[in-house]
Image (cartoon, rainbow, N blue to C red; front, top):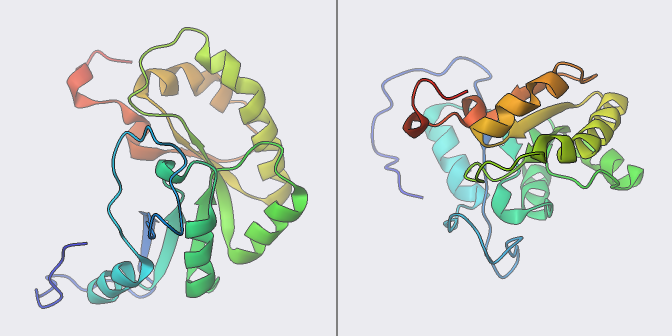
Length: 191
């Protein structure tokens, strides 16, 4: 990570300031990526670097978000959450809809409070994909409701648009990461 800790911060963060979305990337030999066909090559971005920057900026609370590069292997993020502790951190994971209850209970104890529905934001239009994804999303939403968690969607803009009718019926709160991934290149008339 490239930042200058000697550079003066031109603002004062409020008490309990929170970074609501960030990722950590550990050494690839310890935390292998979920696929060899990544859409980007994550740089090494260890928790120690992030915590230095957060301290410099006056941030004292953190929301870890599972990066797509790790797929559903949340170990790097969960290890970082263990290091920081539940008093200062929360997390958003990516899970299989049939993950064991014991795993979800362990994640909850660490501070996990949501599940990311992650589909490559550069995925080209695919008719019927929203309908194909619906059973998985409904199952995860039901499990989130049991835990008091929410859903966080990271989808291509066209898929976000197609998912809105389903989202309106979900039994849990949800957010759309990166403003629904409606890209500027698609123009103002894009859905």
